[in-house]
Image (cartoon, rainbow, N blue to C red; front, top):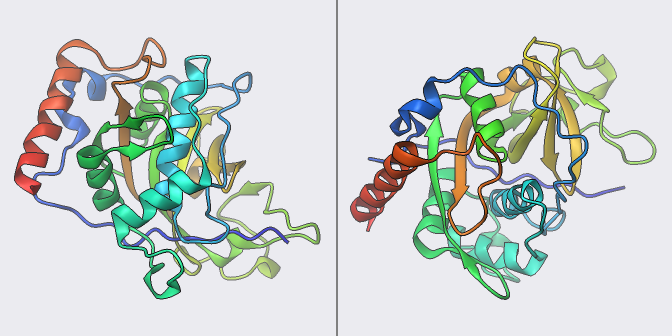
Length: 266
């Protein structure tokens, strides 16, 4: 059986945290009706999330993979990188399971923006902003323009059901069979994952999530029922991953929002 751990603590807000509404043009546009990326491998990695509740760190590492893939290259992110950042951003101490308590997404993102996400050969600094988790058009804009949406979700026990080969349900949905366990959002716990693409915008259209080193399909109604927070990340040190990437005034506004927040959080 494949081991899959969680580790996203309940969503919190911090005074002055950056919000994607700073990018007026980016937020005002209608998101693409479909975002099909079957021809691109975002290279999701487990990054330690089978041994630790480091999904918030693994999500950032996988966002680097996704951004690089859209630019036609890769960024080497190792499990050690993810675990090291997990410790820096949450207080986890290697070898001490009592400190493996997961992370608060906004605090993890704050650490990444302030101190960077250190890899073997480079340290990368994201800028980021939160969005309204009930705004599905906004989530689609994040996926289309910022590589992938960084989500905090409340998983149900039914979502964690495995078949005899250790596979999750092929599609996460809100109408799971009764024998798959409790369908109540949050009954399994909180998890951080990425939303990578989508086939349409109807309730039953499919989205592709990146988690636990794999791609996991879900419906939009599942996303709406499970989501507790959403954030967008951008990497100024990497190539812009497509024409919908923020530029000009939008980029400057998000940079300014991050700088103001970090001054206040210092």
